[in-house]
Length: 362
Image (cartoon, rainbow, N blue to C red; front, side, top):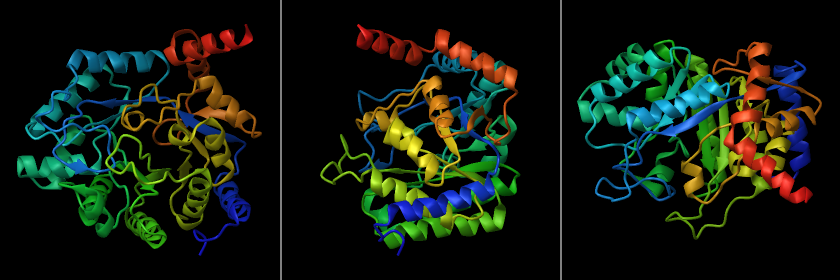
């Protein structure tokens, strides 16, 4: 009924009341990380994805190890404490390849959390290696995996998943990857991409599956939702869901997911102003500066913000902007201030924004 309603402001006020009860503090948070896609080669066929390439495609790649480490080094220099590392479902790499990757990263950057390998990837590893998901997760954790992103969820309803993807994990197995990780003491995020083949009732079913698992394991730290970006995909004929639908769905998620502590704004898909407005529709976190993003960008949606813009967006709402880590612990203020200065000096996104402002002034 709420998703069918046009009373956006009332739903937003209700969601904000929940946020203020869960987060009465005078600050709102953000993170600095980088989305590193180590490969775009994927055996799954997802009609909604503009990023993947088939194993025989001439446009397929696997990142050189030194290039990957250089990306992490730049992230650390700009104050980042985490990388988000995901790829396609590569048909040939065995588990020891991923273990070596994790060990290489942790040996060079022991302080960086690796937020890596979405449930579709992890489930794929079980098939390639003929191992249980418990064994796969245990080995990756020992090698250095720190937390799991909620990618590849789309809508956790098998009817929808069968309609928009082939060769990819279904609902129960996606949830079981998270269940097993949480039982190992790990944390993860949960996501939802909506505005494509699902009904409104199926959006709620998705939220309910997340909520039930959270009641069982308490392993989800945050929920992030965004609208499907149809451009350059096989579903480009669908009209994009707008900001109204995004804000309403996020607000409903805040009301429904009473056991998930944090909601992240999705400025990457919605842009600065709607991303900021989302902080009044149930979100308490502006998400990540995201020094690099490739998947959504391939679909034609490219929103880049500087660290100053993210912090200003929070300040304009009357809150103190604070940097956090993956566990939602606040970063030491001295380190936070150094990150702000480093981004003003070194971050290419920040420098590009300054040039645009100088051109506008002239």
